[in-house]
Length: 404
Ligand code: ASP
Ligand code: MG
Image (cartoon, rainbow, N blue to C red):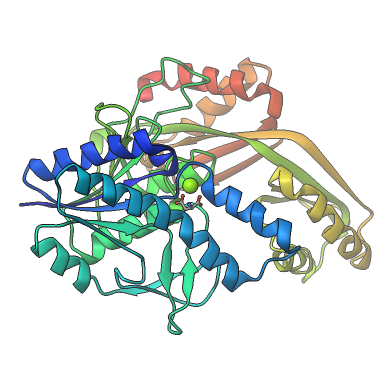
């Protein structure tokens, strides 16, 4: 008998009919002779609605209260799913994160799991129950309810699978799996049968949001295979795992894109120690995450510093940067919010030369100017005009077809 942890996202449990659909899928898994633990997210947009409600009664809702409030979204979906299962004649029980033994630190709204003692879950499984656990939440040492950050139910599922030594973790969502590139831009894009953890993380970091990166990271560290598939059909999904065979590793696994980019340039910066730290510390204090950073070669000990941020963070970043730029003696500060990025990802790039050249040539042939380039060992990212992203993605898909 295998033990399987299944997670169903918010859109999969958005209304009563969908909850019943999920119940039938869970029963099918159980009837194939498996033990099943289910993690569910809150129904549809519930979490967003609860946040809006909180903001209507308080400008800055208290963190602890907000976490307790948000945790109720998952309580609703999970109890309803359990009732549906029971009315279909199954033995099923719902447990909150706390009841399931998920302990966290006290960082409300983005708590980290410190440990899981799944004794209660195991006991219920032994009794033949299907166990439904509320996603996205745990309990701290004070027994206060904490939440794991937006999209945290994926993390709950993978963490539970690891602590229960499950055979696999299945994440069901509203897409069929991980595609080589966005099928909305390239309709003939192929779905990947499998992808390595590292490549999946790189894809997430550059705009492919199928699975929460924290969940992928956890799966990677503990070697837990994760299947991503749709809850609306039976097509096989994408398996995220380690040790992907050599032949698959040698190819481009993905072409990712992100429209949500802005560039900030601090012009005429004196080239001396401490300057980058002054700028990026100020941004970090304001909780703005910076993506690509480029410092030009200096001329007469004066240089330019360029970095990218999410478009939604641009105004705040400029507010933070302007006084810092002045205090370090920079000449000016400019921004550009019309950018986007395209990336190619593939573990094979580590050992095979030529990927970067082919990427740059493809963009050049399409008269697309590259503003900035950033790389990791298995990824090449180009920042380009946001409007040219669809064209770039399509051209790169054609150029790397044989490599995919
Ligand atoms: N309901 C939470 C959210 O919307 C957690 C999740 O969906 O994974 O962020
Ligand atoms: Mg959600």
